[in-house]
Image 1 (cartoon, rainbow, N blue to C red):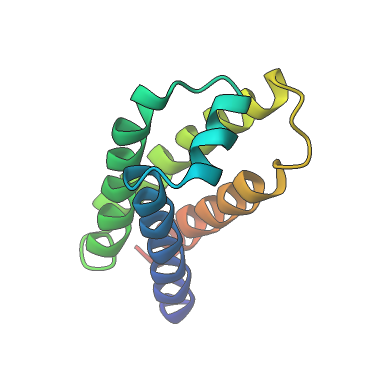
Image 2 (cartoon, rainbow, N blue to C red):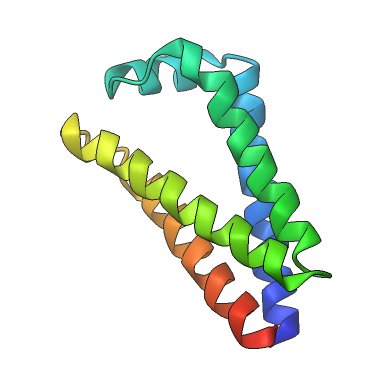
Length: 116
């Protein structure tokens, strides 16, 4: 089970880091996508910081379970909020991305709890 925890945590941390990078560098596709669902551009850096904190927390959590659990819970809340923005904007075509990451965060939480 711990191997699965490591794999999910590392894969999720890489995905979160890439997403944070795209937000920080203001990739036009990302800026337009966030604007379309009502997220102001001024939120992108704080959102990127939260993603990076979650990624680091997942990795630290491999050695200290409470940090990994807290990071996974925070990421679940983050992506529930993100899905809420997509629903509010009726943006169904972009919904799969945050849903997949939400599912991975839930899996990371379950694995971290069961292997703690």
